[in-house]
Length: 257
Length: 272
Image: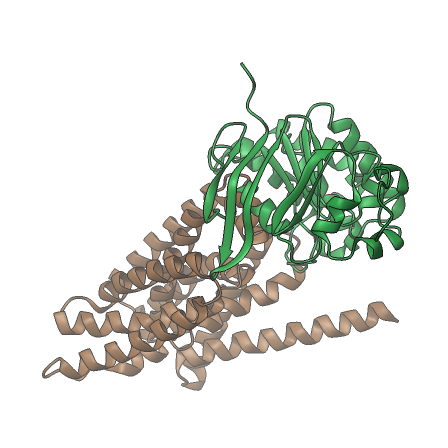
C-alpha cells in the first residue's frame, strides 16, 4: 500500500469577493520532498500556503495532509510566516516566542514541560539565537527576528515545514547556513518554501512549482524557461537579471524569444 | 488617609476599587495587546441597552446589563471572527443601537426617573454588598480562566495565525475573552461609569507595556496600577468633594502622561 503523500491538493480554487485568487490547483507533495513554490507578486503563493495550513478554507476542492484534513493535522506542520515586523512592541522574550512551537504537542492548557524547554533550546541553538533567549523580541533586528520565527517552527518537531520567503531579511551568511540546515532536516521531514529567490534555492530543492493563479509546472528540481514563461509574463527579463542560474535550466531547444 | 475609609460606604468603595482592579488589569492587558479597545468600548456602551431593559422588566440593572453585554459580546465575536474588514462598522452600529435602545426603554418605563448619571459616570460611593460579591466571583472566574489558558491567550495575542496552525482553538479563546471583557466592563460601570470604562481598562496596560518584558508582568503591573488609581482617586474625590469616577480617571491620566514623559526623557538620555 502506498503511503499518503505529505500534502495533496485536489482541484483547489479560492475566491476572494468573487475574484479568483487560485483556480484549479492540484498537486501532490511526497514525504521528504523539498519543494519550492515560485511565482510573481499576487500569484497566490501565500494564499496557497494558508490553504495548506488550514488558515483559509478553499472555495472548491480539498486539501489533505498525510491523508487527514487540515484541522486533524494541526500541529504537524511547522510554519514560518513572512516577517512583516508585526507586533514589535509585544512584551515577549525570544524564548517565549520559540516555546509557542510546542503548543501543538502540549495542548492548550498544559504548562510547558522541561522537554518542551529542551526542544525550544535546541531549536534556538540551531538558529543561532540561544544567546538572545531573554531578549525582548522587539529589540532584535529583522534578520534576527526571522531566525527566531524559524526556531519557533523547528521546536514543534514538524513533519512538514512551510516557509514563506524565509530568507527575505537574513544576511547571506545565515542564508547559506539556513539552507544547509534545511538540507539536513530534509532527511526526515518534508519542506515547502515559497520564495522568489530561486538562485539560492536551486542547489537544494528537488521540485519546483510555478504558480500564477493556477499551477503551471510541478516536477523535478529543474526550472525550464517554458515554466517561467507561463508563470511570469516576461521570462527573458527574469533570466537576464540572473534570477535563475543557468545550470538548473533545461537546454534551450528554441532560441526564438 | 486612614480615617477616610472608616465609614462603611467608603470601605465598600475602596473594596470595590481594589476588586475591580484585579479583573480589569488582567483583561485590560489582553484588550490592549489584542488591539480590541474599540470592541471593548462597543460592549461597554451597548451594555446600556441592558440597563434599560432591566428597568423595563423590573430586574436588577447590573444583572440585566451583564446578560445583555454577554449577548452583545458573542455577536461581536462572531462578526469579528468571520469578517475582520467590516467588523469595526458593525461594532460601531451595535455601540449606538445599544445605547439608543437603553434610553428608549427607560422612557417607556412608567413612573420611574432613573438616575442615568450613575450608570454613565459611575457611583462607587453607593456600591452595595451584593455587588462586591459579584466582583469577587468575576475576579475568581477571570483568574482561573486566564491561568488555565495562559499559553493559548499569549499565542493568540502575539500571532493568531501561528496559534491556529499549532491547533490552538483561537475562535473559542477569542469568544471567552470577549465574554470576560463584558463582565469586567459591567463591574467597571459601578466604579467609573460606562463612558469612562475604556480609560480604566486601557491606561494601566499602556503604561505597563513600556516597562514589562512579559505578558504576565504586564498583567500584574496593570492590576497594581489600577489599585493605585482607585485608591488615590477615591481619596482626592473625598477630600476635594469631586465625582469619584472622573477623579479616578484623572489620576490615571496623570500617571499616563508622567509615564510618557519619563519614557521620552529616558530615550533621550540613552541617545546622548
